Image 1 (cartoon, rainbow over the protein chains, first blue to last red):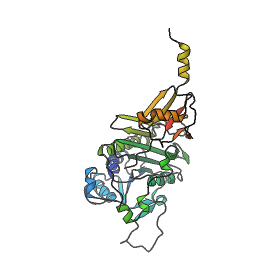
Image 2 (cartoon, rainbow over the protein chains, first blue to last red; image 1 turned 120 degrees about the horizontal axis):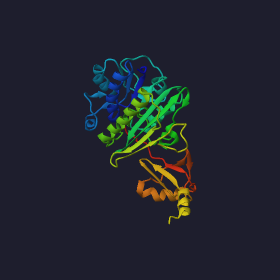
Image 3 (cartoon, rainbow over the protein chains, first blue to last red; image 1 turned 120 degrees about the vertical axis):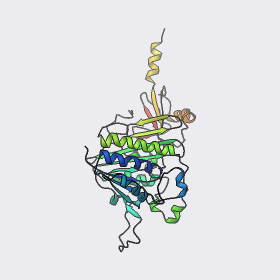
Length: 254
Length: 81
């Protein structure tokens, strides 16, 4: 059996919720002793119920962890209620009643992590992917969808200090110059003004399924494959796999 | 009787393009990226701002497509999670 690893899911909303529900049993029965860190500074609201399945109100990471830990006792499920930012706030006097609401990306990630960026913005995705360049061995997945039936996943992988697949910024300008802001860098008032999107449950589930499939294939089974980026449209019934491996022949995609 | 010369020339002018879930090969060699963009805009809902590139190198609309080129128009990654 493959050695246990640490899995970090950043974003516990629509897609993240489905991903976490699939990842927990995958780790429990396939990589016993693994750690599943769920990171989200946001809380559930009644309006989330249309698309997200949750058992209680409160911080999303905590609600997910409380729900799943009893069912998966051999997996360490750890909630982190903070927003991921570039640098952790300067340490002030320890105040357990007023803990920090932000965590620096390099204080969150450790060598060997498998990370999932299933957030609602490119700024946080860029933060995670750029930070990954500082690690010798790491896997960063991104999964996202638009407000309709299009979705995509990307897998950035580093081994022994070298890129196995290209950074997504090589193909996507939004990962270089994000058109949005990281909620972790906003004030509470600014976060409250963020308009909720009108996503579809089916697309969230499809993105999560693709991430789980690639996790099973590449992380658990350690198979090499070329489908490092996948784009799909549920309405059209079409999908395309893109080979973003650094050793791929020029524009020769699967 | 098949015109093998014309057929061979046609194959020599082949290039491919991709955008999101779409992929197509056709006799585009000799045309510019801008011309290709206009042909595909309606069919693929290709936005005007979609960056065109080959081998990770950005291409201008004036770039002349060569036989065997694989042109990719950057499709924005899914934003929401």
